[in-house]
Image (cartoon, rainbow, N blue to C red; front, side, top):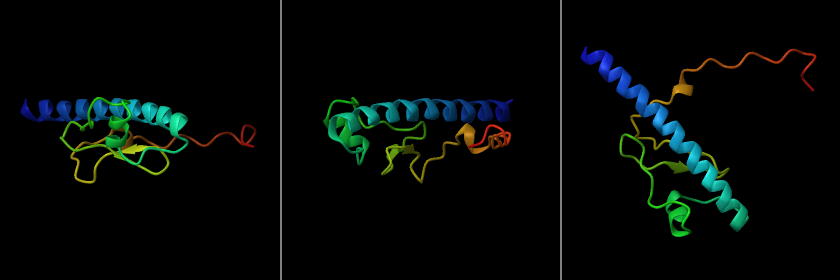
Amino acid sequence: DPTIRANAARHIDGLRAELEMEEIQRRAALFYERNGRWPSSTAEMVSQGLLGAVPLDPSGHPYQMQPDGSVTLHPDSTVTLEYDYAPSPPPLPSAVQH
């Protein structure tokens, strides 16, 4: 069924993007350790040898670095991340909260 295949492909693209974003963030942390600041772009990470090329998400858009070192999808990306639809975690029991 074409609809099931398309849905599966979107799911796989989202999972792939999540894994790639985690790896970029890991390498951004290495950049931070070396430079005392977060990278302004993935291109800056390429220039320091932390990435081989500017990484593109499954829809062909470059990942975006945020000022806090986190990685996000480009605004024009058509990728849907799984955690976009994940329910919020339940609140901690009051005995565990500080």
